[in-house]
Image (cartoon, rainbow, N blue to C red; front, side):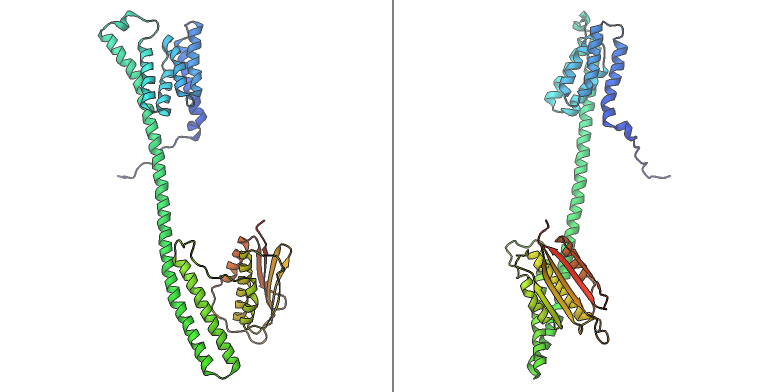
Length: 380
């Protein structure tokens, strides 16, 4: 025998539409008024119809609607309109100081029904049963309204708890991600810094032991680049290992357009530079993106075409800064391919898009390669 729970039954959407839930009580109260007051005088019929019609405003003015149903309930034996009004008061205004007087008023109106008779003031079994009936007739819808209100509040609370649990799950996942990021940062620092330190030491040893001026200059450049790489690596690892960096934490100077001549010179490539960014004060993010674009392009040329002629152009075009790095077709055999992750150009393109610019990269017709970025002075 299967013990799986049965799926919850869902009512059609039109059966639970708000307008239908508002209209139905008024309709069946009109039917009740028509059946009870069909032989009554016109003013009694009018009071009964009024009691049914005002139910359309019961959610906005529950206490007022209840008071307007009392005359019809008093002169005619209608139940559905006042019962609905008492239920609405309990569901919309659940405070005891509101619910108890309203339910008591309906019980009194039902007990001392018009026209009054001597039986209402005599002590007897029938009078007691009628009093109990009047109380139950008022207490039933009041209790049901309070129960409905409690159910809605519990559902809202459960929904809030569910959202809180989902939020805590996301925070826990982010905390695990931060912890893993710190661990990877330590691993990266240990591995990469060790290898770069060895390169720096070997370059320093070569600089001391050789007498060739060209070899000394090359060794000095390698050592300076290694030291600078170690500094940048430590800064990046520090950022990765810090979940919430202090706002007053010192930051290293970021590369700007003024640093491009040194970058091109230290690349070791046969580069022809045309740097004319103009007199406009470009935003720091734009200058940094331009620097990283040239840096990544020169790095790729060093990997794949170190002997090719290189052309670097950085110039102002109105409110946009254009960066072009192009290399000619490499002469001779292709250079030895160095390992790479393939993420450099993707990161540059995303950086340019965040600034509101564009970046394109691809081969040229003469067998070379070109990287071009257009960076705006502002998002506007």
